[in-house]
Amino acid sequence: MRLAERIVRYMEAKKYSLARKQGEKNIIYVEGMNPDGTLNADTPNHFNDARLILGFRDGLPTLEGAWEATTEPGFYYTDNPMNPKGAARIAFGQYRAWQVGIHGYSEPHESLIQVGLVKVHRDWNRDMMRTGDSIDEGYFGINQHHGFDHPVNDIHTAGAGCFVGRLRREHFDFMKRLLTDPRYVADQEYIFTTTIIPGNKL
Image (cartoon, rainbow, N blue to C red; front, side, top):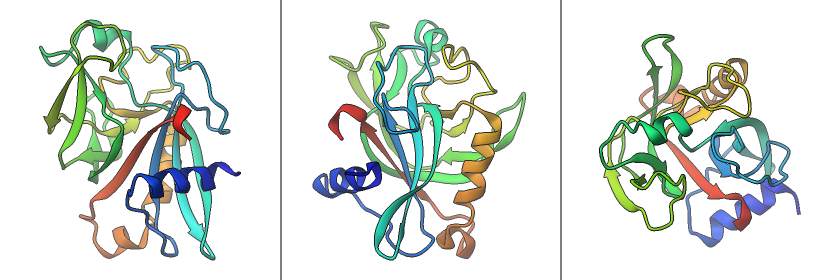
């Protein structure tokens, strides 16, 4: 079964929303998966998650884009958390929580900015795992931005809990495709939904 079909089957089983109309985009992150759909070891501090755009053509799901990303903070912000409760690790699920905006100060760039509630695990024991960690819900600046072309094996300071596409050029491709979504074209304050999936569950 193709990856797009496996994702749809998983989302339907979870009763997640799916945008199926022509041109509409579904934003998906699969943790511990390469952009080609193969699983990896999900090694800490690596860009080892897949950022995907899924659409439908003639009623059939298709992947319109796949890029290297991370949904997790690296060593730096795990050891130096921005919140005293611990670094944020997104809770798997689906959230309608992002609008197009500008991320960053040193290198501001077009991104998806958190405007709705999300749930995160607080890595208080700094083991880079969710197991046993408390859940925190709120507005934490969990944006979807680029990773400044950091190497695959070093997230460094690129992510403190955000969804980070590793390469600038790939991030801008991701954004360019999203901006063609007819819902955004009709309303530039449109709030995008994003789904985060553990790769070993597909």
